[in-house]
Amino acid sequence: MKIKTKLRLGFGFLFVVVLFFGAISLYYIQDISNNAKVILKDNYETLSYTREMRTLLDENNLPLAPAVAAQFDKQLGKEEHNVTEKGEQQAVAQLRVAFDQLNHQHTPLNQQVAQREVRSHLRQIELLNMQAIVRKNDAARASVNQASLMLGIAGAFTFLVLFSFSVNFPGFIANPLRALLEGIREISERNYSKRLHFDQGDEFAEVAGAFNNMAARLNEWENSNLATVLSEKRRIETIIEQMQDAIVGVDEKQEVLFMNDTARKVLNITEDKVIGQNTQKLVQNNDLFRSIITNDSAVKALKIVLDSKELHFQLQSRDIFVPNLDKQSDAIKIATKSAGKVYVLRNITEFKERDEAKTNFIATISHELKTPISSIKMSLKLLKDERVGAMNTEQQQLVEHIADDSARLLKITSELLELSQVETGNIQLNFVPVDPMQIVDYAINSVNFQAGQKGIAIDVVSDGHLPKVQADVEKTAWVLVNFLSNALRYSAEKSKIIVKLAVGHKQVEFSVRDFGKGIDEQYQKRLFDRYFQVPTDGQNKSGSGLGLAISKDFIEAQQGKIWVESAIGEGSRFVFSLPASY
Image 1 (cartoon, one colour):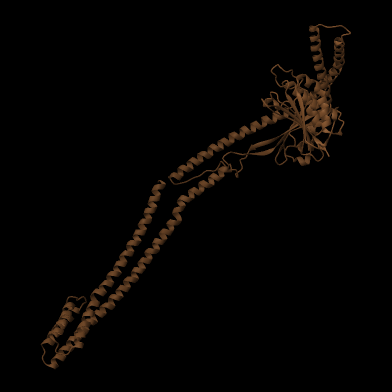
Image 2 (tube, one colour):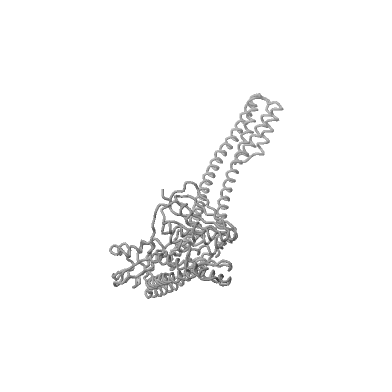
């Protein structure tokens, strides 16, 4: 039976019960009303007639006047039409006979006898009606008591029926809903074995069937998914175990999730059961492991001695994020939460050795090239001397080209030597307190000749009362010269370059601004990378791609910062700042 039909039957039953109680109430109320009407209509009217007739006798002398006799006859006529009680008809007839005799008696004595007869019959009629009133009143009271009893029984029966209905009928709807809610909660707790069973053949039974089908499907999916996850877990564990890099996984409770044999060997961990142990226990006597798990940076270089050999490792750490499936998460989009960290130690010893070999090779080659290049420059200087011999125009042009290329080669070899010092950590800095204008003057004097050839003016703008900086004068001036050389290379003839000195946040800022074509934003992030060169249109000769990289190393070695600001069509502004020395 459908729920709608059951609801209709239930409310129909309630309507019938209420209608039944109302019908009984109306019946007994009508019965009581009828009894009251009978008493008022019949008996009380008879008493009223007899009272009027007695009053006429009491207030008038015998013989009765015709008008009084007429009034008496009128009241008697009404009584004759209002006979309701047993014996009352006979008493009324006798009253009529006695009244007629009263009207026909002429002697006072006979009139007195007739009057007593009339009064006797009036008392008889009143007595009959008074007895009837008492009897009917008792009957009415009994009827009221019976009605009260019946209404009480009917009301109690109705109350019990309605109370039972109000208690049991809502459960017919609420109990299946409660069972369904509990089932849904069990499913949310991943208890996919939960089933619902309803005996009614209604919509709830259909919902239970759909719920059980859903739970069965979820159970199948959970089992298949668990098997897949276990298989993937074993495969990943095998891959991690066979990797040459040392890998350690730690969960959010700082317990070890996994650790391959390479990591055990590098970290010198000989315990058999490491998985599941808290890292606080493992790092008590292992400083290397402690430095790894307390590392805050994403990438860190480490030097480890293993088997009497110095090895270089690069430590990388990554947070593990998983979907947040907690019960409290009710957001539409599933958020993620941290489930721990993975630490990877990559053995970069081979690359480090190659890099050192490259640096040594560059340093050696650069050092060896300086001598022949210097000899070439000396030979070119001698060729230009007219005492050796005059050259024609074509020869002079060739000599000039050779001189330019020799100067460029000499600059590149110098930069390579500087780079090798930086890479090997042999860079030597001589910190002294120096006036920033001294560094600017030193750099401008170095490029004045080059600026004069292109007709470019170099303007210096400075804040007043500049503090000194604690810096290496030669290295800092080298950086500023590099900025100015680049600005001169990419500036148009007869243009302007602005060198500005400013103070802010306990830093002295050196900047060189040109008004050339500017640098595309996609190249700005790589300007300070080694060997990177901005693509040119062929009008300007590009450098080695080392000048800005070396400049960055020099400035950062002095606790400073270096950056560039540029836009296409607006020129470029190269800036570095050094801590002020107060």
